[in-house]
Image (cartoon, rainbow, N blue to C red; front, top):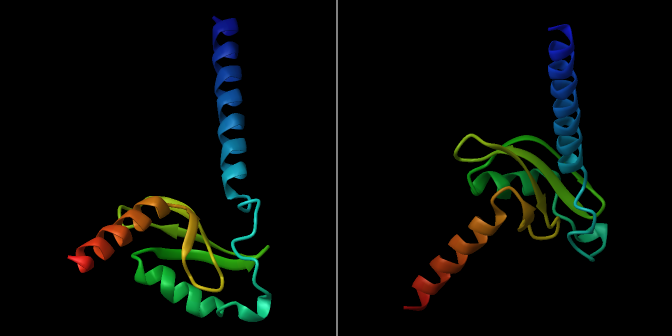
Length: 114
């Protein structure tokens, strides 16, 4: 009985360690710049926060580093996420549901052409 409990504990500890590693990997920066423009062209952090908030996100933390705006957010459905934002435009380039945002923007642009 003790051997079975020990194995279960070992498996649970391994799973917890792996889950922690995945979370840490997701929290790291994008690994590439979001823009090639100089820092003088960046919007202020407050202006970037306003642009992200306009898209329906609640901001928990934000900073600009490595030529990216990094935002820890909660989306409209209550899910936590990380967004990477071009600091010169406020456009989401990765993370969160950026692909969904881009698709929605494309659909509305198509409707405007009709």
